[in-house]
Image (cartoon, rainbow, N blue to C red; front, side, top):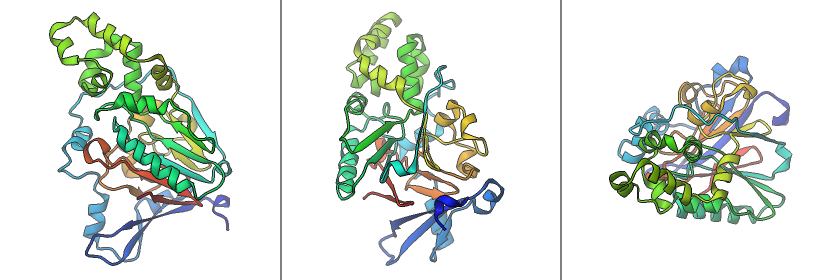
Length: 325
């Protein structure tokens, strides 16, 4: 039976085992109909693997990665609201693309973005048809080159490649700052100075010697109109058949049409534990993981590029998902 004609599907991911192992682990993340979801919440593992190793793999983050830890623990005050205007949601047929690539949270890591694109272009050069690249959001903040990243995302892609730049919570917050300059104090506590510094704004100097009006004017003058346009037009979700791409995740058990942008940008629990609880697969970023995580109806690929130097690229082809090396 073809997978498209039933209520479940399997995703297989191969990754290298530790150096002291000669085998490979194959992880199967399985999503089912809503009535059977509870049976498959946990990651199914084919071939033997010690339970201690499985627990280490499922750990969401390495404690030594201070920058990622900071993101998880919320050292910077979050902006709880989202932009008032709902964002568009895109829908494609699975037959539209011969391969789909997803790129995790970039966070100002321009050189890593270029490296990820090179991997994709090289990989897809051996294929025919059209590829879809889905950027999972959070292009600004944390890293040092947010302006370069946003400028690059404004450029056209090759003819045989369609690109969707999803909105992340940091991108939504940045646009809100551009539209409502009075939000600067709360935005700055949340985002820090890296993004404005990449646009040539000396925030430290302005905070010490300038007025609130001077800061607002500097921001208004420094951000190009086409950057603001890109941020405003980013969708909050894209679906390709029964695969859903969002920045953070979805509210478990809630129909996609009823999901709020706020959850799509910000949610962690209960999504991380329970998964989507719908007959679909969710590919997301937002919550950093030490290694790409495949389990309970979701694939997480934010590997904390700004702190680890690892920007993950996921390829989905012929109903199989692998990480490009």
